[in-house]
Length: 173
Image (cartoon, rainbow, N blue to C red; front, side, top):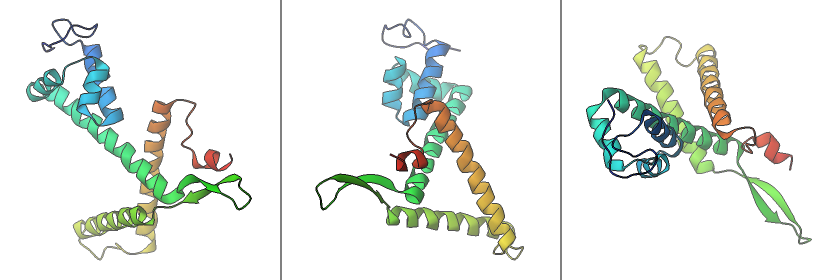
């Protein structure tokens, strides 16, 4: 069930331990980068690629880790598009303040993708079953809010208590 590897760290004797494989998957979810995840977990890239090719369970874990990474990326992009980014600005008196900067182009791309998904979902339901009415729009908004909340909770759990990603907290400084 475990695979032979190349180097000789704590995780790398003749086999990759289950602990090291879990560490690799955790780092892969965090970084979406196989090379970085393998290095941090102390395993070789070739070993994890071989294991992915030969183990359906590990391949499923790999896909789940990548999906988690993309969920976090989507959340951060949505958050930036909706709440902007605090940037330092020089005031006329020479002091430094903060202003919120919005990436309207990114927000527009996300909105277009969201609307395309809604249209596809409406087409899949057979169009005309209330795809454009207020109730379905409200349901879609509620579903999106619930998804974003789940992603936020995962980010909070992985970042720990010291996270500064809260836009309300950032605007109070």
